Amino acid sequence: MARRVVITGMGLVSPLGNTLEESFAAAFAGQSGIRRCDQYLWGEYGEKIPIRVAGTVQNFDPSKYVEPKFVDRYDPCLSFALAATQEALNDANIDFTNELRDRTGVLIGTAVTGCTSWHKCFHMIFVQKRAHEIPGYLLMQMSGNMPSGIVALNHKFRGPNLAIVNACATSGTTIGIASDYIRYGRSDVIVTGAVEAAISPAMYGSLTNLRAINPTTDPIRASKPFSADRAGLVKGEGCGIIILESLDQAKARGARIYGEILGDCQTNDAYHIISPEPTGENWARTIRLAIESSGIGINDVDYISAHAASTLLGDLTETKAIKSVFGKRAYDIPVTASKSMHGHAFGATGALELILALKGMQEDKVIPTINLTMPDPECDLDYIPNVGRTAKANVLLKNSFGFGGTNSCMVIRKGA
Image (cartoon, rainbow, N blue to C red; front, side):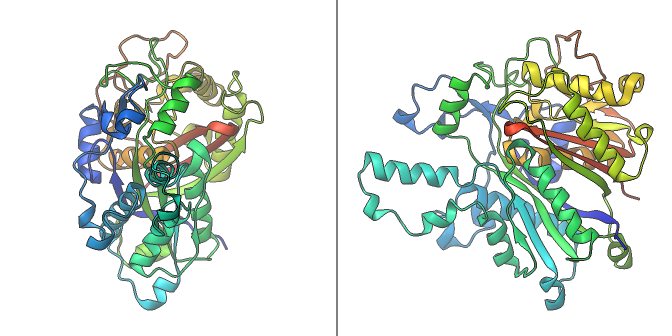
């Protein structure tokens, strides 16, 4: 018999703050974590890149989470993962016995692993011509499973250990797979989510020439989901981690329950490597299948955390998909686009958005979509423009859509 899956802990490192509380307070207040990112673009090697704004993590001290001898060795994505995991575990307050550690898994996704470490290697190879001196530890920083592996090592979790790479749908895909480990009894606790630390010359050079990134010099108004003057995504970084358990186990130990993962779905457009199928029907199909898997009705969904990367076609396509699924009722459902405040953290972005939305639901608050000052007549839903509001929400739909045509949607019910 399938077990019900609940979220009992959450941790966050984001451009809005280095903890969940800091990040949520900034998000609800409509503050922006997007700023200039010159220091990420490697001096003379990135000086010709014209776009220099991003959602960057600030004042983060890795020495709080990493042994001193590893502080200068660990790629930022590893430090972010350790920090968010520690907060989530503290929040969940689980008493880990040796037996439970054998039944605790770690599934942490990332779209681009070890970007800083890759750049160090390339610099040593092609600029310094010192390939023969590349430190042995750099290889581990560039392996996609290292965030999961380092978390498991630090906490002695000996259950399943996986890394999922699925572009901008990585978070939803990873959490969906992690849920099944609990649902079908393969694990008793799962640490899951996603991490990204890939603001770099390679990323920015490519995104600039792809014309996917907003060419603005104004950090505050750089990310403008659903606005008529939106002009492309803004890169972000960070880590979001949640703790999953069965409902029975969580109730038996008196845990606080943030929410129950009712269902999820992953599909592919099979249309284009970057652009979504413009009618929105492929995305609508994914939403419908996620709701169908959750065992609830279309009318039960009362809050949406949108993907909304601030691209012309993407935001319009998502709006069409929501209208296709919910009909006239789509206009009554609040839709949050929190990338407007923290940027697009690629693999980690869905985890950041899910955690911020779910935290708000606990406090009967929905967070705003900032920079929405020029309404697009074709994007005409309730995007909670500019100012957060007090409102009750019981069932969240979390959308994530990514390069390669990959799609992931989750349905989460607020916990008691």
